[in-house]
Image 1 (tube, rainbow, N blue to C red):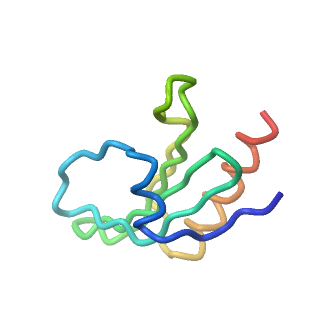
Image 2 (cartoon, rainbow, N blue to C red):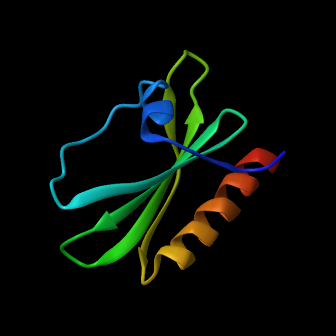
Length: 90
């Protein structure tokens, strides 16, 4: 099974709750089976983060992993994909 890039609209269909952080800009959304991932650009620190979300068994999602302070989009996406694979293999 491979990780696929999805649109924000596809991501939003999962009804994932979000905080309100004006400096955090979502820049990429991904899916691996039921696992979701999102890449975030921090406009204050000018670096990248990711969040991996896992199904909670009740129709929602819970945090699975968080990575912060990546200097490049490429480093963040590589780390996000590895984390999603790790969560899948569990």
